[in-house]
Length: 230
Ligand SMILES: C[S@@+](CC[C@H](N)C(=O)[O-])C[C@H]1O[C@@H](n2cnc3c(N)ncnc32)[C@H](O)[C@@H]1O
Image (cartoon, rainbow, N blue to C red; front, side, top):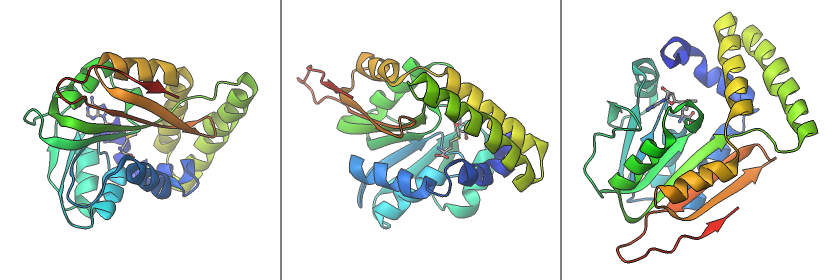
């Protein structure tokens, strides 16, 4: 599906985030500690929207690698990012154990068939005390706000996208987005999955009860305690 929609992705993203997408992605990465000298793997790099913000924070120092399943999304990323881009899945990262400071993943949890496998892979490639950073959207918990979000994100924005992109495919992509958002697991379930994968200090910060920024840390040898905060 992402192969078919790659050419519309950046425009749809602009519409969907009302232009705040770059700022939000960069703010979350900065809060997680991404900066110069880090080794970062951006899983599900897509067209590179999150990786570009990581690159900006790293100021030319460190290592940034992008991984994605879709060759068309990777081809788009290649146009604006001069970093290694690898076609692979989140569930089988072609990287050695314990070499990465940050595993980041923007808006891809909803598309994974097995979140447990992907989190286990992230943990495997992270060094002890390395961080997992996940951005995702999930439906607001309040039923009235969820209904309002469904009207805007599931109704108005797909129509706007179709006009802006002059393509019915763009509408299909937005329709798909809302379906996956509306049915995706709540933050508590994602935090549970992070804890089950062994991450410590698993936390979720929400904006508008809609945009979620999850982070967790791989324990250092000997550390077993798991804190959880939401
Ligand atoms: C919504 S896009 C997110 C792109 C980017 N991270 C961002 O912040 O805009 C989701 C991406 O996840 C990729 N993807 C879906 N399932 C995947 C998997 N199992 N392994 C790796 N990438 C996957 C898709 O190809 C797509 O590029």
